[in-house]
Image (cartoon, rainbow, N blue to C red; front, top):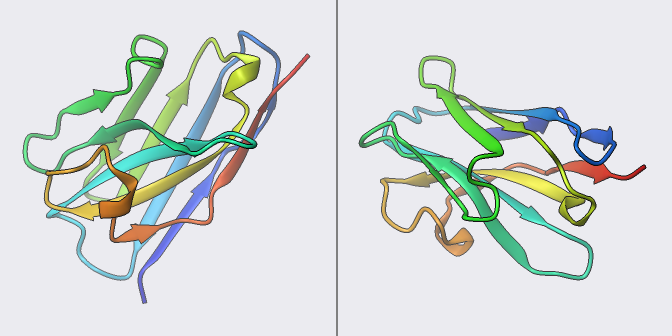
Length: 124
């Protein structure tokens, strides 16, 4: 049974940092890209960052580029997201997903597996 589980969310002050983790298990994920998405209250989901299996490079949404860092331990099937200089408007549920291949990694509807999400609250 495939499982994807996020952890590391919490409450942080504006300008603060958090590190999220996502552990995937139950099958081989070597040919899957993995990514982070977030959904703020009352808004649709948006792509945040991903690591592709083809080139092992990291890709970011413009809004987080330079502040967030995504990385992946391919051996352990764990995806990380370091969030720095967080803003109040970035309060959201953060989801981790896995998509077969590398095309369409910015589109949530193409993902094959999802976690339950972890809440990030940015507030003073």
